[in-house]
Image 1 (cartoon, rainbow, N blue to C red):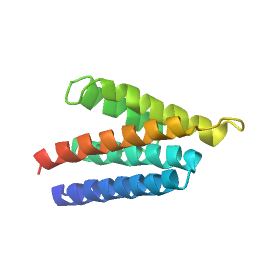
Image 2 (image 1 turned 135 degrees about the horizontal axis):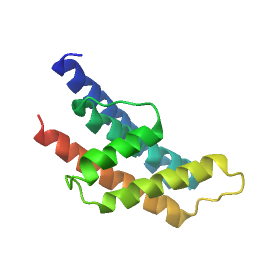
Image 3 (image 1 turned 60 degrees about the vertical axis):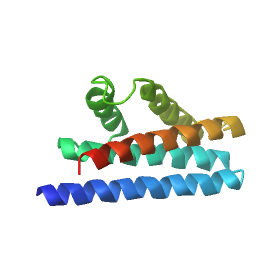
Length: 132
């Protein structure tokens, strides 16, 4: 891909991440906490995919995206390592709420997931702006 194509792909993925975050906020306002957790995670997932594009990495596997994001952005201290805990929580809660029949996402859990997603999107958006 050409550099402009990669930039456009990164921008599109970041827009998708922001759409997911908006959906999470709507679901939270409607007291739909399971949906909030799901859309919060996907906001973070698509943001991580967006920031990895300029590095020449892509994967549809969630574990691959998370591992490469940690390798390139957390272990190198480009982002604070505490972000790793946020990513782990987002993934864990989303997975449990999607696949565990009896898992209940509380309002407190949903609030935390939404905050984690907002934090990650802000970090990635600001970082990508420095690369323009």
